Image (cartoon, rainbow, N blue to C red):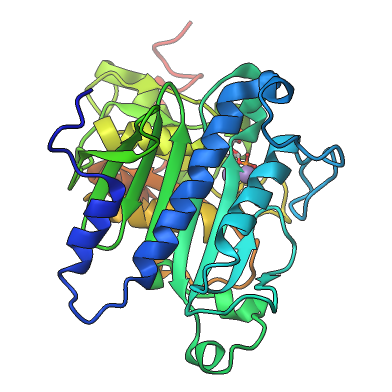
Length: 365
Ligand code: AHG
Ligand code: MN
Ligand code: MN
């Protein structure tokens, strides 16, 4: 690909900042440091098991531990988390960080200045796919720290991070697939950048991306179907019924088990993703985490004209109650997400068949 005349991520950020002559450039600097962490993770993911041969940092041997989610940490989960922290702790733009891989908020060390933003991230999403060479990614959300944190420079607490997704200043993800891409919103639409492998720069390849409003593609882990609530069962049944069902068209299904990869497919060509609240484990109202999975993807979707919801309310309106809170998540093509919300709001349709055609009907043997 020729880069002649194309914008780098740096140029995109500078052009965006020109819309706000008052701004200091701190947000831009922070995003560039986040993007550097993503480049470093992209390298490590790409080298796979060759990491020892090329002098890249070794994944800590202690991995295999269980994180705060009760999930096994892969060595690359731990290493990616390290990279996010080391690339961002020093720059003076952050008041604190929080991550899927750390139970408590991370305090900016005393040797560095503290700033006005909070960075929240899932350093490696879909990490169960690492060993089988399927796309994975990193997800991040940038919030403004509460005023008293900025004024005092005090340590951050969990409560400082509990802000609804609407408050996000910027959000994005990196996807480590056949090419590495960075998808970003600073509140003015969604831009997609591809990492130029030899320049080492993220190059703008699409701006003001729009999620198609309609789709024939849905994504859900159907092995959980017996735990789904009625509105989700109804929606999926109607998709499966295809042309001859109430939807009058055939649907396709996808499930990668890397939310970043599903979000990216949906951003580029439409679709609907569901990891809804279910009854599988009453202690977990959903699988995905609100602050560093649902909210950033929710902001990307809304900024691209799509929609993100719990099924009952917009994701970005949910007031978080804890750092690692899980939530039911539905996102993607606007008309499909709205339909799913409607199914949640409507009383369940009666499924009892008309008496004439029931088992003991006159017309049955
Ligand atoms: P993580 O690797 O950060 O724990 O997230 C994995 C998530 C998400 O990416 C994916 O959509 C989902 O888990 C897959 O869940 P199932 O294993 O239930 O399919
Ligand atoms: Mn994840
Ligand atoms: Mn993760």
